[in-house]
View 1 (cartoon, rainbow, N blue to C red):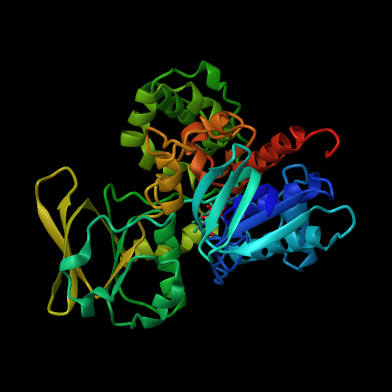
View 2 (view 1 turned 45 degrees about the horizontal axis):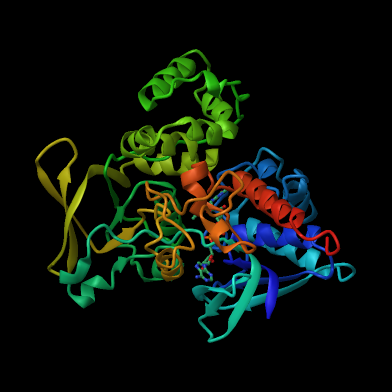
Length: 456
Ligand SMILES: Cc1cc2nc3c(=O)[nH]c(=O)nc-3n(C[C@H](O)[C@H](O)[C@H](O)COP(=O)(O)OP(=O)(O)OC[C@H]3O[C@@H](n4cnc5c(N)ncnc54)[C@H](O)[C@@H]3O)c2cc1C
């Protein structure tokens, strides 16, 4: 079957694109959504069942549709949740909201385009007779489309070191993907835990361990030993920032932002002023400066920009103050087993000293892949057949300002787009809902605009 639009993926980006397609396409149009995740719309982020896994963006900015800003807050109210626009809802509620929004749109039968949800992995892609792109699916089927939107997200980052030398019995206590939360039930309260990585995933897992009754020590190893900061209890007003007036180098920009931060009561107002303009700022940087940002400034950017809900931060900070959570800054060098325990050997940051953490469990919280293409067999194949090209800095695939894959004009009239973290090379900050929802709508508007007038 040849679809007007194929959406590949099953996380938030895919569902945001699908909802906009349903709103904007005529009844004659056909859409296929191909995803391998059973919880369409939930992805890794919103699949969790734990209430303490909270959104890190206030509810008032999490509506799925940018043109209906109060939608999520209204949904929370209708569900009897006592939360305001400035509060931080649970991620499980958000997953339900995304699914409810989709279900509501699908219930409208009159004038709605056809949408087929296909539970399968897209395994390969070829160009067919210059007029469609065809996907081979893991279930053996093949589907073709005139417009394609890739919404593949990014995979969980691999352990920085292959634990091949560790015996199997001990290796079963290395949790490579912490988002499969079943591992929590296997941790005894007398065990010791070492977490690799100190970002948002680490905080989530520490709190999940506590919720499961774990009361032991948690050692956290990361290159800089920096942990995310918290949102203010009352958010300060964003500081208006003229990004065009900022210097063109990373060191110059940081200097200017530090000066601005010193001049306000709360540094968060500077980050929040910059936030909606990050795309513009990124576009102004040369590739050399972008590489410099990724090499030197990224960990600092992350902890200031991707903040946690205030009460989540307080709870975590308490564990750090009482010594339950301890940070180590260094570079993981070895993973071995000794007397039935795991030994993570590391070089202490800024020294040549070697140190080790011994623990019963090692949890990989190094986060999400930096959107390369190596995690995805589909993207690797599309790159080999020159349907896509990898971003030179490893930030996904090359797209233009309209999120259309660069070079895909060669396969005209087929149009190939990408949404979400895969487009980080063009937009940089494109992993959170407030950015993805705008991108998803813009892509759909682009697709709808180019349909022949008789069909529109
Ligand atoms: C733990 C966590 C918490 C977060 N919290 C927030 C928050 O509070 N607020 C916020 O705004 N953002 C948050 N984010 C950012 C979040 O990533 C985005 O909001 C959004 O979930 C990204 O969705 P996505 O669809 O682009 O990617 P994903 O959710 O990764 O979904 C991609 C989907 O595509 C599927 N897929 C991949 N390859 C194929 C293939 N070949 N064939 C078929 N299907 C395929 C995958 O199985 C997956 O289901 C959080 C992220 C994480 C990981």
